[in-house]
Structure formats: structure tokens, C-alpha cells
Image (cartoon, rainbow, N blue to C red):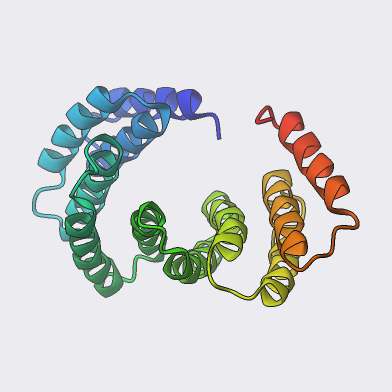
Length: 220
């Protein structure tokens, strides 16, 4: 995703739609894009505006608070992880009541970040599987692929037996067919899992292929 372009388009939309009932959602989307781009101070300012625009709207306010929690996890996570988890779980209940599956996927992904920081990879894997399913259901391909790529890594780091993890990597590859970033993540996971099982043949080829894919994407 071209984050600067996304932020620019959202800023332009806010300028063109001063009276839109969706301004709060646009502000929140812009804040998230700013967070993704590392413009954290601007993101915080935009979230203050979004909070004002979504007051009285339980679901809109939940989305804005979720973005604040993402920002907090990036800027001051020390000692805050469990408090963030509790707040996310409250937001998940609000989004569940509203049947907002796209919001649920995003909220659940924040729980993945909390678990990842605490090296709770088994919990993270379970949530990632749920996120990918939710994202697929609402047609959010980007979120689905992001979750699947992370899921492959969680299978390596967590307690899943290596043989089972390899089978699940094959499932991930099938679901993500055509996505080179996920393909690279799966190849790397398969290389590590095969090494755990003492199956060294083909490992270097997998690693080389993963590196080539990432270089093609500008990520190598």
C-alpha cells in the first residue's frame, strides 16, 4: 500500500467534504495512515479531531479509540500492554454488537501485536487465523494477506509441531496464491520448519527464492 498517497487522498477528501456525515471515519482513516507512515504527532492531532466528530456514535468512537491504542502501542508500550488488551476487548464487544467484521479484524490484529510483544505466539496464531477469516469475509484482501504472512511466522515461533506447521503453511500458500509477500513469508517459514525436522535438502533454494521475492517488492 502507498501510504503517502493514501494520506494525501484522505486529506483531499476531508477538504472536499466539509459537511459529510462520514468526516469522523475519514479523519480516523487518515490518522491510521499517518501512524503507518510514522507521522505520529500529526496522527494524534487528527485523532483528537476524529474523537470530536464521532462523539455520540458508539461505533465511530470505538474505531477512533482503537486508533489511539495503536498509537499508544507504538509510542509508549512499556507497562501498558495489558491495559491496551483490556480496552481492545471492550472495543471488540462494541464492534461485535454492531456486526462490524472489518472493524473486528482490525481490532483483533492489535491483540496480535500485544501477544507478539509478549512472545505469546500460540495465541497470536489463533487470532491471526481469525483475522484472516474475517478479512476474507468482508473482502479486505490487504488485511487478509497481512494476517496470513504473519501467521506463517507465528507457526515457526509458537508451539505448533513442525510437521503440522508445514501442512498449515501449505494451506496459507494456497489461500494467498499470487501474493508475493506472503509467498516469501511461507518460504522462510518452511525453510526453518524443515531445518527443525532435519530436512535440509532444498532449504537454501527456499531462502534464495524468498529473498528474490522480497527484493522484487523493494523489501529485500
